[in-house]
Image 1 (cartoon, rainbow, N blue to C red):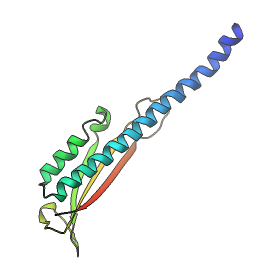
Image 2 (image 1 turned 135 degrees about the vertical axis):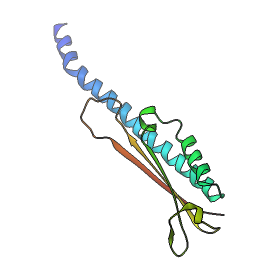
Image 3 (image 1 turned 90 degrees about the vertical axis):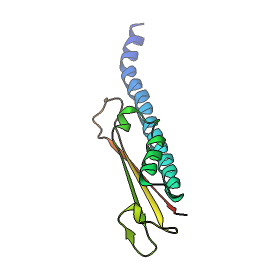
Image 4 (image 1 turned 60 degrees about the horizontal axis):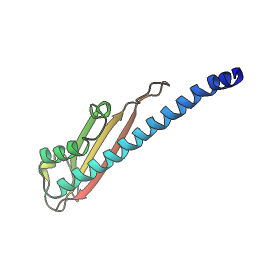
Length: 130
């Protein structure tokens, strides 16, 4: 029984790191999927002629299921592209232009078992303005 306790003491820390690593990676994948969906929803709002405030509101609503640590580090950018040039303000768009929504989320690791830097999840979606 003493040998089993020694083996457990050697294996348990590695098992804990593995389990917490899987949980952390799952949270990163979750943030990636949530950001992609929020970007698509916000771009759809833009393509239907929504105002910039409505687009940002849609993006924020789509990101509502992010963890509080990730939701504190979100940047939403709304731009547009005309057929001939890039417009500087979303308010300069007309039908046929392209709305571009970019959301950036800085993901903080939940378990500080290792000194990893934060990961930035960036998603961009473009849709034609109708």
